[in-house]
Image (tube, rainbow, N blue to C red; front, top):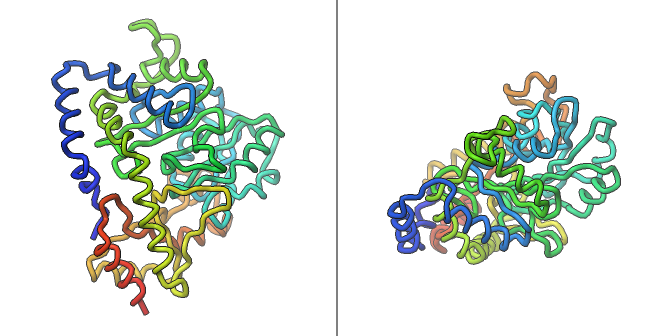
Length: 361
């Protein structure tokens, strides 16, 4: 029983196929009315002034730091417990990631921020992991106190809130991925940023299009990172249903939390003031490998998010970190397991997963 992305398509098949044909028949495939429409509608959804569509979530991250002028010699505080793309957004620009351990909710531990501040610190990257908002009150207070830039990685938190405010709207830039498995998923790679700063939005539009505001007149060395018309159109369809899709995931998560046997696993908790959209439902167990095999034998697929922390990855060996440097992060990496969680999951399918997990001896 793997995660079934096709269920999300089948539920809205008629709308999605009609939009795909509309775009294909329009003859306009790059930076046209669908992109403009999605940018307008996603800005309205998040309550921000501007949205800029991009080719991927990673592009959103590295371009955000590029536009904010953060580069060589600068340090960016980032959670040690995150997907490696969060860190790549920093290092692509030549800046140095400064890792901070996670709290009990898997996100940045705000009590540790002051201890990681140096004269080189220029920004904080808040990652709303697994669909739950970070402690934005603590992060915002820290950034304001020290006059730091704040970028939010919202790849997994489409619609999640902290004290009623949607993620991506607290900092200078909110970065989104619309990879197919996300709560608001495209049918290929896609991303975007949101911001209330008109200059940042204008710069992002320039950078995404080869550094050009006017064709063949290039102001900076930019990128080819344009959200295409087809993906934008399909995202517009899914955006209309995002609230319902998130509510469905909350029902699934609530059932897991109430029916799973707590004595066998450490279940996820929701921070006070935060609202999760449950991009993943992540349990922890020291018997993970045994559990994975047990579930696979019964046809239940699971995923580890994430088995190798960025500070221990081969890609960042140059940073000089070693096992034991971030023990909480490393303990999470050794014990987390994401259970089946997808729109269209039936009550019977989830009951089978729950009963199988509770039978694990």
